[in-house]
Length: 252
Length: 252
Image (cartoon, rainbow over all chains, first blue to last red; front, side, top):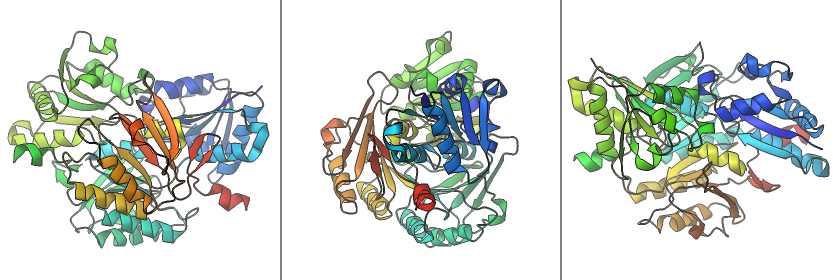
């Protein structure tokens, strides 16, 4: 008899952005597993009376493996992620670990519960930068060779995609962001609008807009999302907007 | 004295995926404006006693302009979108129309309320296809020249991005999807997993997984989202998973 394993997206962290579906999954859980910072985002009343297993950064393997053990013991287990669990988060690793366990985990019911992704939260605060085709690139080279990241940045810039940068820097990674901006700037005007959102929908939220040439990487921290406009993106009354083409089609 | 204009994301349509923030915006609204199909997704109790302005497809300009008029008359106005209002939806057009009105609309409070995007809902149902860098491309050439779309598809494929296709076809657009698949297939193995999600989280939901060479465009309709794997994406127990690299790093 096995339980269920749900990988649940908390969204940016504000309870006003937590879906009823995610709430219900947390309510039904016997065990809640997650990175300490994310577990802290779960509303208190949903944690009461439950086993909480929180681990520090870089503990992804242990965290997901521990959650799998709990679910296989027959307990309803939730792994919490910030944003959407399906975007640079834990959903994929869970399926890989289930596969590694073979027969022992074959019948396990694994569900992914979507959350508001960081890119949506950041875009909403900036205006409407993602109205047209966009590419999302993580600058973390801990798991991905830097050459692959450079190639993707160049392709995204060449294709005139609006570019979303995840994991732009950390204490140990500081040269990747300036290098990424250099690659993008080779294809894009220096006045291209850039939006930086730190800690969207949390108390420490900061929303900054600048341009590709004025961008100071010092304003960016580990919890920032960066959105770089495409060739049409412009500022309208302080908001960053990528037109989709309605005005061109219907007003000219 | 002007009201507020909120552009609100309903998510895929199931009330379980509507955020409390979006609910609250609908509750406070005097007027709810939207495409007929999307207005139908708003829970009945949130529509009671309110003016509802719903328009057919292609009525985007009239819809947003009408909403702007209501807000400028001092009424709390909500424009509803399915998914996230900031991704191929109405958020951008609203800012452009505010700009067009000049001084008359300069003081208007415009807020974008994020919703669960179609790409997140589709990914959650498929497994974990968006765990690594991805690019989103709309195949609608109503507002975007087809050459631009082709160029973006080629760049996304060359950069080994997981590719999300929005608006893959409509009654009048049927050749774009086969052509897009051809462009992508030039850069990607024919066994690459492809996921198709029709009407995510609605009664008519369908989730299909296939491969690039076996993909039959006939299974796709106007309300489908398509996700095409990158070079590492594989099927695990029926789920589509793009590994991020944890297993390679920690298990070998």
